[in-house]
Image (cartoon, rainbow, N blue to C red; front, side, top):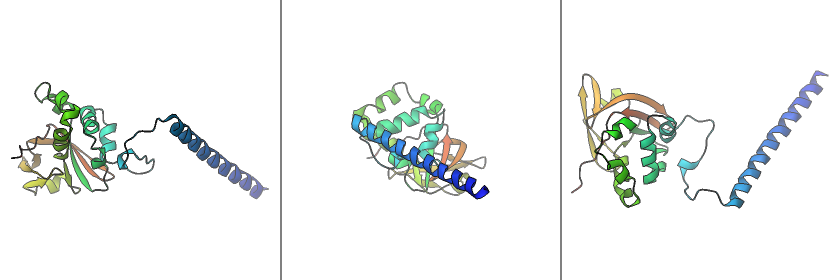
Length: 189
């Protein structure tokens, strides 16, 4: 009797799972038919319900990084933040962006400034999973835009290009250090 009940429950579970998958596929087909699928592709646009959030997902989920996320989307560099890594991302807060001269952010997110914005955002990313302890041992970091940012140690804490790390969050593809200043790369000659 107990084995029949277990068999019945197992069969019911399989049918339920199969039905849910079919409904999800039907919804995906309807979306394709309606032509509402985004043109943009890459790792940044894949969904993963089981893994640890990547650097981009952490920024998207943060109430203090709306400006950063909008800038990343305007520059279309989402895929740079979800690469396998490991990556170290220095994520300026909305308050840090607000400290820039008036109109700077609005100007940078214009389509004609996409290259400049991309360069600035890549200046906030370095290869490796660099904890604050490791950062205190490095004089400079090679950034994703092929430039270097200076690292100083003040009161035993790393200061990256003049920005203080106010929090750190481990990501599935590295680490996100929340910083209190936007890092601006040196002007290329």
